[in-house]
Amino acid sequence: MANEQKLKKIACEVIDGFSPQLKNLSRDIWNHPELCFEEKYAHKRITDFLQVRGFNVERSYKLDTAFRAQPEGRSTGDGPNVAVLCEYDALPEIGHACGHNLIATVGVAASLGIQAALQSPDFQGKGMLTVLGTPAEEGGGGKVDLINSGAFADVDVAMMAHPSQFNLEKPVYLAMTEIKISYHGKASHASSYPWNGINALDAAVLCYTNISHLRQQIKPTWRAHGVITNGGAKPNIIPELAELEYYIRAPTDTELVVLKEKVVGCIEGAATATGCKVTYKFDPKPYSSLMSNDLMASLYVENSLQVGVNPERDPEKMKKAGGSTDMGNVSHVVPSIHPKYYIGTTVSAHSHAFAQQTKTEEAEDYSLAVAKALAMTGIDLLLKPELVQQAKQTFKEALEAELAAA
Ligand SMILES: [Zn+2]
Ligand SMILES: [Zn+2]
Image 1 (spheres, protein in one colour):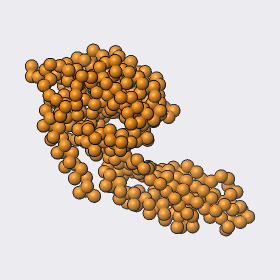
Image 2 (cartoon, rainbow, N blue to C red):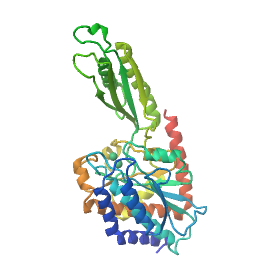
Image 3 (cartoon, helix red, strand yellow):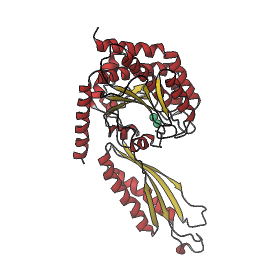
């Protein structure tokens, strides 16, 4: 058996061997849902799990609930540093409806597999594995903070996998920014002296309508969706303050810049029309689109076929836009993959039904198969550093193509 196959077999056997503990880990995180930046239980549970299994763990690495772990007894050397990312935050009210308990488990399982391969006498390479615990994917942008604080400075490639109703090696995740808009008018008695007032709610309604009209002139792949979060206090007072919150999204960061400008026109136009003052704030940590690395994605597909994870080939599913993720930001810093994988349900994430599915043994079994495919992909990259160089080249080309398409 070729060396590479031997090491991949070792990784898969280790993941199978730890299967009961890994399933417990997933179930335990599921039972303790924690919101973004508050993932104290998961942080402790995962870092303890890795530490007792031979990892050097840095808890609260750069952020309270982030961590970094590397297999003991290895120096970073001058080989590639392959990062496997874990997420573990939950959603308000519906708990682990995005399945980040499974993401953590996939990351930990893949890392145990890669660790075993690295420690095998058959491994002759020089590379390193880094497990990164990345909090606050659901709106907190934990990975953006980690990027800004240098957590990816020594990382060569990054990977993780996300539960879904599809197996897609290069899913579409949109660039996204949030906008908070406030219209400031003037209060007055709405019946006695309405002409003395300046109606902030009218401005908010116009803003909403302007953006709704804009929708006909934007690309079908772009998104603008919002709510009025404050529409005034009482019908007999001309509202002096009205507020909206919007998310706008596009398939690339450069397209999002164009959409932003158009939306700003809608926001300011509503202020002019009503005589209100307007203030608006864009998210200081916008999410970038996901730029899946072609080379890493094809390695992942080859490996996933070997463990029975069959990629979807329906063009409609392959093009289907998903939400947004801070893994998009990572994918603009180092070559990355963030495949979606099927967990035995056809319902989408962020629903009660999906939350129920993410604690089933069926979903856990799919997750461990995907962990094997990720571990095997990591082994490919560690064994053949020239593949990492190629991945970096395709990464550079993809970044240039994105800028050129502006
Ligand atoms: Zn989510
Ligand atoms: Zn998610």
